[in-house]
Image (tube, rainbow, N blue to C red; front, side, top):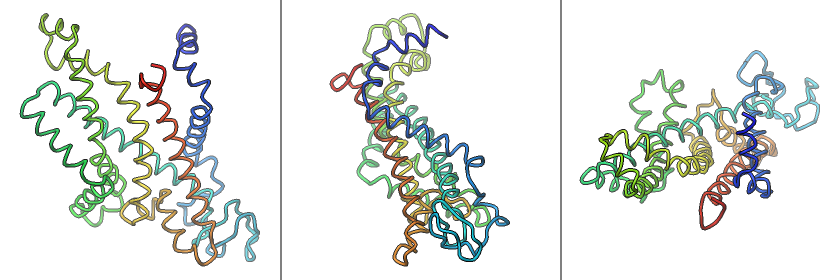
Length: 307
């Protein structure tokens, strides 16, 4: 273990990271936000999902100002239902991060599988997969996600729609984001298939599946992980966009996008804090993840960073 830690500290990757303030700042911000979301039940002053703890008299309480009726003080204020904004942000980040990570994982598994199959099989299979990818790239991903979400929700029984909304959202975003994984994996795999070690594996009788799993996939994995990091920020933004439009997370499980949609209705009536603080949380989360993903991409690009 000590040897591994020493090798990591002496690696070019850590050298580049330790001398890039943007990478350090974005990594620390992302880590803090994720830890805060995971520890929401401990850190949150109130439980926004427990009706017994809500008091409508606390509705529209301003930040750090004692409520005129109850005397309660909320750091970020309270919304129309009397829910503590800070608590809803912490729990809302859990939903946003869960949807983002799950959607990226689903898109990564689907895209890597189709990319490897396309490269290994070739021919008609390769042409069909790549033409489908090209067609999907011609449409904005958010529109594709909305279409898939609408179709999936229409075939879901009405009594199960709220319970299944999060999973439908994950599938919708994942199906709209698999293309970039498939294209990158296919291109990298086709390069790897031309190398001598793959030819040697074929000569000794290793199957196509064995070659793709043991030899090709490990070599394309770094590129896949870089894309996944960047896709995470896009997935979080997609979830927030869908929830803001009212076709995402249900009000009973509010994400950051749902909180922003709720706050938007009170923006011009003076309760600015209901939309301001969730928007700042979403901005910090998406920006920090995106900046760290950009640094990873530049680091693994031989023309732009240290490989």
